Image (cartoon, rainbow, N blue to C red; front, side):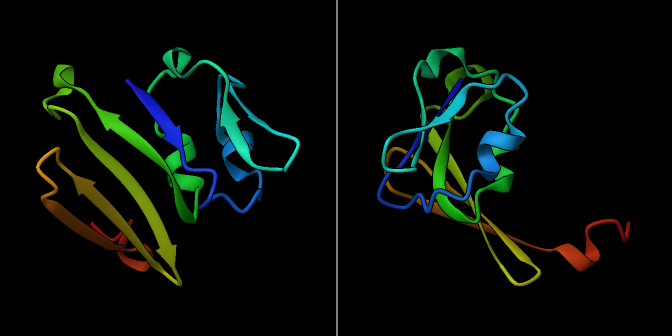
Length: 104
């Protein structure tokens, strides 16, 4: 399992760096987040949940039933949008209202 960081979408906020329990994410000279060795990623998804721009994608490998799908998260106001794209470019969107997150 690993993540990929899209430099063009990264705004350099550093939230992913703070969230990473393995201290694996750093900033480059442009202030953009990167991971030197993506294979070291633990797959905890903490960084993805903190990235508000959708710059971080998590690869859902075959070992967890993802068959190469990717997951990204974006946020606007109180809505978290989880986007899952499979290798055939099919997209599934899951929207979560954070006001309802602990409701059940």
